[in-house]
Image (tube, rainbow, N blue to C red; front, side, top):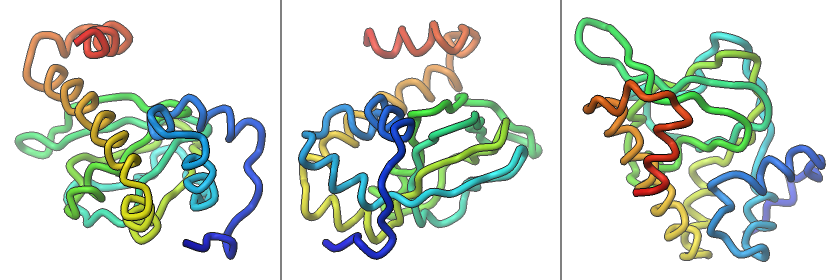
Length: 170
């Protein structure tokens, strides 16, 4: 796979964020370099929607700067906040792996800089590096359990940090 056309060197801050990202947590370093080369920088302003629930998945993202909220629409147009995303957090890969639609909306709580991985590049990476799929499935299971506990149990009332700790222990 040739990503050279849109490639630019990562800043030190971007590399530090990526090293903490769940995307890279289970990935061997030699595979991480290939993934870094496929990422493209995007900027979003406060209140802007990065992805919308129900839309077709065309990319996944890693936050580099700023914060965003993951929200899910429930009855009568109401929304429930599922998570707060911070630098190093990723989103959108579940819909890409499943070939489907977004299951939540991600809205900027501040100005956000993110690294975007297109669907085409994502699927090529999964084909070329099957260990990436395994790593993402582990991260996805972690996130699904977190979302379930938050949405459907009294654990959702716990502070975000306590809920994350609980999920990690499980």
